[in-house]
Length: 135
Image (cartoon, rainbow, N blue to C red; front, side, top):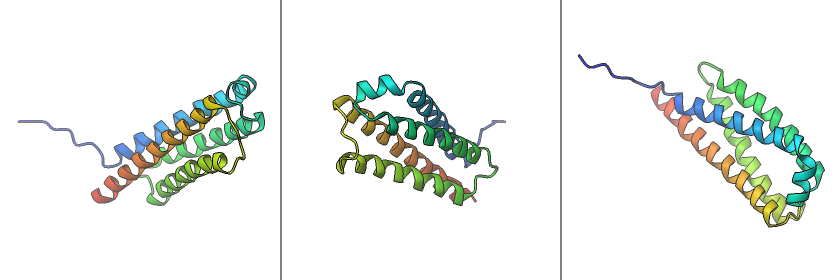
């Protein structure tokens, strides 16, 4: 007799949400705890770093809460995906519109975090799709 493991349909979604919450919390803490040196190194105004750090900590709490729901409600998952995509678009708009004018390292910082958030949104989308197909 063979024993097989069938992962829950929401495993990918839940893991993507937990990873999103963890990375958001770490980035938020970094931006709040090291605002002054980050501002010097990245040429980003300290207010943007502090504000972004505070938003990321609040986001961590919300996404972490969503990840604990059983099952994860599709409306909550869509909300997370939508906000993540808005964050990506907002990050690019900050640069394009000149709201922030970082140096090369700062530009890399902003674009790298936007890319990571885009990957989270993609993983969450595929996880939600898998969950909906299994339902």
